[in-house]
Image (cartoon, rainbow, N blue to C red; front, side, top):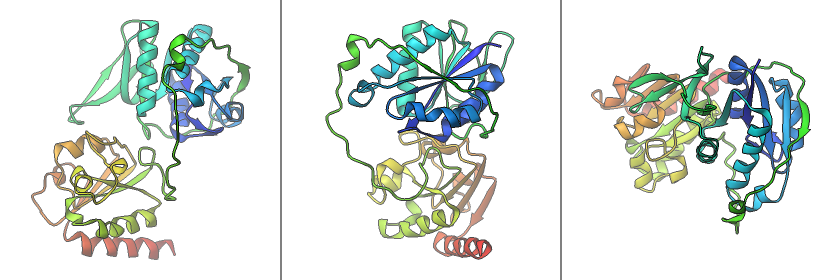
Length: 320
């Protein structure tokens, strides 16, 4: 069976959930070979093997931390040349898509971004995507070269599938461009205790109907009762009620959780583009004609300041 390269997204050896989802998808089309780079790369092997990696290629160097994406592209290209894979899978984050695009240009291959599913095809892997703000679902494949595919988080269930996970050192020669853009400083993100927005299984978002930064605590309380991430519409972000890093939408982040709860959000196409692939969508809005209700699985017509606190209390009661 052909091998499939999987780029590992990890933090000091702690593998992030989207990578484990990629391993599940990779097993559908071949044997996963994971590529782990940077500090702690060697510590990823156990969990990667547990989820199906037959081999783990590792490499650590100061360049991965000191410079932007080019060193990682150099390493992934080295892995590609060493393995000759049937496909290369990368998590669909901002950095992941840049790495994938640069790699595709280098190896002369086509690229598919933001896939939400993957299956084997007679002429190569077939990716499912949501197009035109998720109004259409398309299936496509790369017709030239080795497919480079980025996959949205929460597109597949994480499945354990123990494999050998043999660790091999990857030989990497950095290009001149690898040190072209240096990282001069880092500021740790303030911890909220909530899951990462793009990776969360549940997202609770607030919009214009929240009517003020001081009222977002209602949204946060519901999110915390569910162990969810907090999102916001563009209107709420533009008004300064919530940080831009939490914006869901075409000009914000795309999310695809198992459950998305929209409170006080009208459902403009800009917002829908970032959350329409969610598995189950619930909306709470006092305007029965709000466009969001055309999209939802469950809708509640009512004042969010009455509905959301009751929902939060009920969840807490059921949790005991």
